[in-house]
Length: 245
Image 1 (cartoon, rainbow, N blue to C red):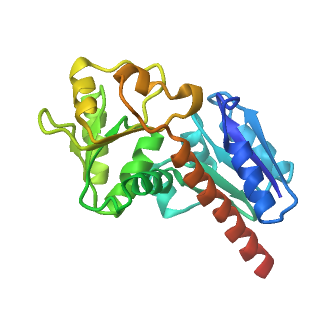
Image 2 (image 1 turned 90 degrees about the horizontal axis):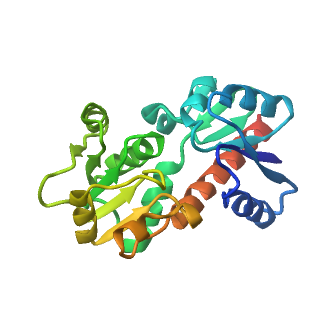
C-alpha cells in the first residue's frame, strides 16, 4: 500500500508518522512519504502518483482545490466544499474531504458532547474552513464566519447556512483556519479571548495563535489525527471494494 502527502510546505507534517502508525496497526505492508509540490503543480503530481502505482494520497495546502479539479469521482463531502484532501487511485481517481470530520471530532472530544446547537465561529473561508462549516452544518451547529473580504464571507455564509461574524455576542467556540502569520485586529483578539474554547487548525511550530492571544489555544493535533484516521479508513474501504469486485 503506497501512500503519500503532497503540498507546500510538508516538512512539518505529522501525517507520515500517523499514517505509518495506522499501517502498522492494521498489519499492512506499506509506505507513506511526504512530497513537496508547489502551487500549480498539483495535477501533474497526482498524475505521477497514479502512474507510479500509489494507492492514494493526502493533499494539503495549497493544492486542495487543484486536486478537486482533477478527480474523476467525488464524494458529497468534497463536492460541497470544492476541495479534496484525500485521493484513492483505482479505476477512477476518487476524491473526498476529511477535514470537516477531523475538526468536529476534535471539538466534540474536547467538549465531551456533540456540537449540535453550539455557537461556533470559523476564521477564514478557504478549503479547510469550508469543510469545517459543511460538517458543522450537517451536525446542527450555529456557525459564524470571519474574514477580511466581505464578499467572500457572504458567499461562504450563503453556502453553509452560516452568519457573518457578529459585532456583539461573539461565538463561544472558535476554530481558526488562518495561516500562522495572520495578524488579527484588536476587536477580534478581544472576541477570541472571551471565547470558552479556541482551536487553531495549525499544529506544532505553525500553531502561533496562542502566542498572539496570550491565552490557552488548542492546537490542531487532535483535528489532524481524526482527519488522518478518516482518510485511512477511506483508503481501506475502497481497497475492500476493489478486492470484492
